[in-house]
Length: 433
Ligand code: SAM
Ligand code: F3S
Image (cartoon, rainbow, N blue to C red):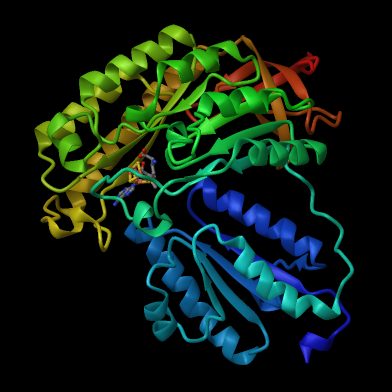
């Protein structure tokens, strides 16, 4: 019945996980809008429900399973509703089909086209494009998918497969299009963004991508994430320093501050090499915003090994630390090893890192008090303008003018570990060209 209706079709899109999933969801939303679909506020009101999933940790997978079970009744009541699942939850499709027979389609991670093809068949009677959604000021652009590393704890490379890099001209075309629709900043995405190009015939590298994207007129800022410490080259660091649009912001997961744990994680660097890399980055890019990822409670991690991580974080003083308690993931090498750090102890270590980082980030950000920083304003959030500095600090301010998509000079009047508040002092001329 619904298929023949002349009213616009609607979609509901639920996304969890990494920036890659966010980028895929945006591409899907754009594609659905072009097909005439409109966003619905709730799954109950949608003709197409899409879950874009993550299974990097057990807790994420549990959320997906919960969401899928709660949609079972809805699908029974409204069998004409299409239910699609994409993202890293989609591994063994025949097993998933048996377990969740009410799902219409399981699409591999990033396979937006499979869902659009299904939506297109349903939308055939409804060819009027919906009004386009507001385009983001800061947009994600995947430059590679998959990963060629073999970190023993990680399920993502199993679900996303080997690294596949997009050709540079395709990346530049997408950036141009986004800028044409109002984007001023792009973040180039890859599981190991700094390994970009090793799978392409003429082996371009991320520095080549940065040079090419830098030439896009109307684009003001470029970021990239996530970098693998073993793949970061001197040329890449020099390129970040040389290109004014590339922001001083590096995401460089360390995972552990202990060599034995790093070896068992198969991270392919030592603590000394990591420390040296950070020193080289900081020397070339003074004041750079440096973020890292840490896993606590990995198989066999002793208290002394955890302390090595804690001390490294104290020493290197990152701007941001994403910390997670280790959770065994099916199919990974580490899942066969004893998960021998008790849950309460993992949580204690996670909390200790959180507390330490709260103090460090608070101290780092307090140094901005009274300083004036350049903020690219992304949106209005609960009555305050929200944007980020080049080093990825979140800044809020209140002002009556429309600042969306503009560069503001903001004097910092309050700082906390996760964000800062300020008053606007004026506008900055956009970089030319
Ligand atoms: N490519 C990046 C790198 O070089 O580490 C990160 C990719 S991973 C998908 C994102 C983050 O999730 C990791 O940095 C890690 O801290 C965390 N993570 C991955 N597997 C995990 C697991 N089994 N348990 C807990 N955290 C995990
Ligand atoms: Fe996973 Fe390690 Fe790659 S964390 S995505 S296998 S770099």
